[in-house]
Image 1: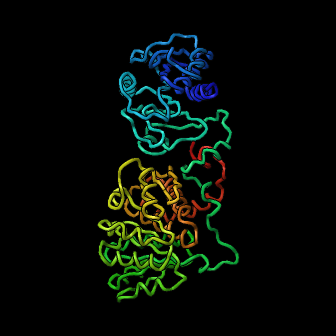
Image 2 (image 1 turned 45 degrees about the vertical axis):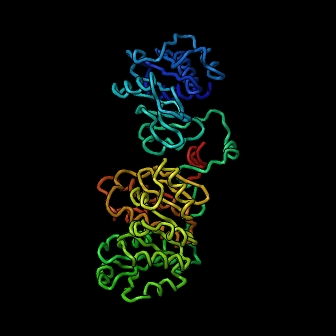
Amino acid sequence: MENAGRAVADAVARRWPPQPLAVLCGPGNNGGDGFAAARVLAERGWPVRLALLGERTALKGDAAWAAAQWTGPVEALSPGALEAATLVIDALFGAGLARPLEGAAATIIRVLNERELPVIAVDVPSGIDGGTGEVRGAAPSAALTVTFFRRKPGHLLLPGRAHCGATVVAPIGITGDVLTSIAPGTGANHPALWLGDFPSPVESGHKYSRGHALIAGGAVMTGAARLAARAAARIGAGLVTVATPESAFAIYAAALTGVIVAPVGRAGDFAALLADKRRNAALIGPGAGVGDATRDKVLAVLAAGKAAVFDADALTVFADRPAELFGAIRSPCVLTPHEGEFARLFDASGSKLERARRAAQASGAVVLLKGADTVIAAPDGRAAINENAPPQLATAGSGDVLAGIVLGLLAQRMQPFEAACAAAWLHGDAAGRFGVGLVAEDLIETLPATLAGLQRVTHTSHQTAAGFA
């Protein structure tokens, strides 16, 4: 607790000059961290005012010890404690909060937000559920959050992430081998999770050894499959084939260079493409249309044992019979729904992390639940939260590019969980590199720079590489 309080004090002193500071302490260990931080800053000459939720005599254990070291006044928690303060440390409640804020705590959080005072949160902003990112009643919008040892899911999942501001992870003496005993099943998506499995060209390789991806193209929204095809090729698939209705063949053939365009006008044509064992991965969904033909193609891909990505229409077409899809999944498979598509197939109750994990277990597929806080979950319980997606990704076609990247990695025989994690990170990194004005096509053109940068990414970053505490 002494180390935690000192870490908070150091983080505050690095960012702000001494000024009137209010420290708001709760009745548990988070409050004890606040007492320690207040004492350290006061010793350094900061004008500190401390307010406590509850009675000082009710504090237990380490929190009671930390409070005993504080020699200044302790006042009851109320908005009056904020008078003259220009900076606030929120040490009311930490990541383990299990109930909504109420009473004096909820009132002072409301006042903090109304006055827009800079807030430094200890562990998480009070009111944020550290496991889900949900707001329990109320939460301040912090300028800085100082947490310890490892981040928690609530630091990355929305809306919690939006309340944290900049997040600093402070070492407080907990050794890394603690994670071995904790064995966290959830981590932040970072190249350290999958870079060792990422496919790279080898001198003895050829186009077929790098995989052959097959995409079912639609007759009307042809751009979706074209984006996916180009993304699969750009990420390294040796060959890409788009199976297209004869009516749209000329559109695909004129627009795609370096991609095979195969007309599938007769019954059995798509099955014939699947029969080629060199076509080892398939994508159905982008622009495919909602109808029996799309459903039949999905089931044919699964029956052929291909690695598969199903997105958009390939998911919606099973809205009235999800068990049929789940029962057919036997080969490596990634589902890439947005929230609306997810709700058509799965139980949409609970936090995003819980929902994605349940869906993966129910379907037998890796589920990549898209959004600013994309969650990737595997049937074995592993899950990763992606954090590098900028808001510019909210543009038509970006999901088609993401599906194509997953496909290209599966074609190169990357395992589905690692492929989905890698695709989400690469997708976000490319968008961040391009910046404002992004359209989906720009993601594909920026991938080479992302791949070049990936070679320089190290397997460090203690706050991301090994999971959450």
